[in-house]
Image (cartoon, rainbow, N blue to C red):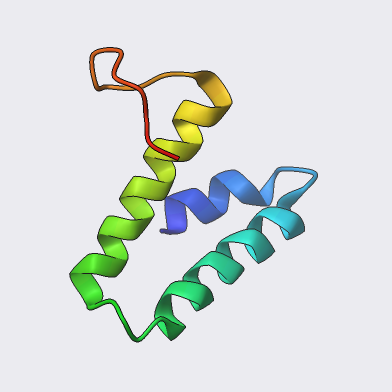
Length: 67
């Protein structure tokens, strides 16, 4: 985690990045429907979906990502 914080520290928009991450983490921590491993899976899926939506890149052999 320190590596990521060091990379972010030099960015102009670092406060927005840190706040966005904090919001996501707090939202997942407050979700009582998910256990710890499901919360991690949720982050992984969110990252994959965001990557797909921003760059149309998927590791799923051109299968369309569900919305």
